[in-house]
Amino acid sequence: MKRIGVLTSGGDTPGMNSAIRAVLKTGIAMGMQVMGVYHGYKGLIEGRVDYLSHEKVENKMHKGGTILRTARSEVFKTEEGINKAISVLRAYGIEGLIVIGGDGSFRGCMELVKRGVPTIGIPGTIDNDMGYTDFTIGFDTAVNNVMNEIYKIRDTMRAHDRVGVIEVMGRNCGDIALWAGVGGAADLILVPERPMSWEDAANRLAQNKLRGKYTSIVMIAEGAGKAEDFAEYVRQHTDVEIKATVLGYIQRGGNPSAFDRVLASRLGQRAVELLAENDYGKAVGIRRNKIYEVPLDEAVGMRDRFDNKLYDLNTVMAQF
Ligand code: ADP
Image (cartoon, rainbow, N blue to C red; front, side):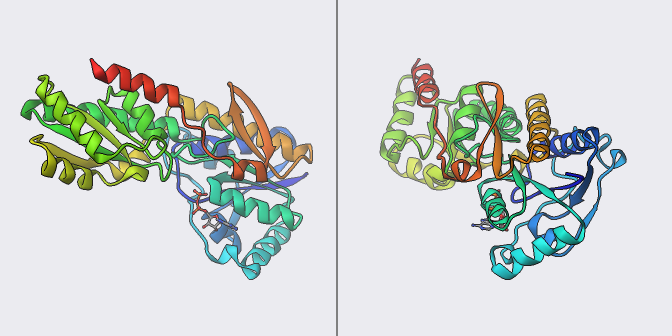
């Protein structure tokens, strides 16, 4: 392959720039030209394509977001849209495409592969909701972002003997709540994978208060409900004073962690190698610290494997 393209799609994540850099540098090392497609599939349809160069990726590795920008595109899901995208790839002589994104973006990859476009998916989502890979790019940074906020919220909750409930992202996946909760010593973690009635959760907080533990931190994954709804339930059914915080987009911003930069670099390299080997239609991932690949259709079909042992560990630690 002489010319390949790379795009970022769906939600942005810290670390995407490291993956773009690795794709560019590996591609050049293999004698390829690397084109950047701006604004995801939307930009592809609109022909927003340009050469990537060392200058464009230089000093960007430590920055969050994505230098290629990202977008969502409903048009890409139509026959007309995808045909337009493929004609743009042909017009630019792009023989293979690397897509950095989440589950939806990978479904887009599959549609391209079906139509004969060599495509590789790199997992980029803070949610960590892709079961075929232990980690997705951006998850570790998001967890660290959340963990650092937990300590700030705990300071002020403690000053008032209050409970703080913190809502975090993750769509239907509780991994951010779980990891940040364990790292931030949360007292209770509410996630969709381990359903707990709000009655039980509120009772735990009331019991904590009875035994003299006035300040608790509750993590709630967005897939398990809204922090404010839970806080209102607790107010109505107990005498616990509780305040809700929704962390929102700060979770997704900021400098990527070392882990995300290294992971993204390794995945970017493997993606280019696969295109060079003509072994496309794959999603690259990490399992037991080894970079590996699976067919895209297996990757999108695989549910996240929740770490029940880690959840139970937190429950034990929160008891005492
Ligand atoms: P993420 O990749 O983060 O999961 P989305 O689910 O929003 O984000 O998907 C990103 C883009 O991928 C969508 O805007 C759309 O263009 C494309 N996409 C999603 N699902 C499909 C699908 N079933 N077929 C074709 N393209 C899809």
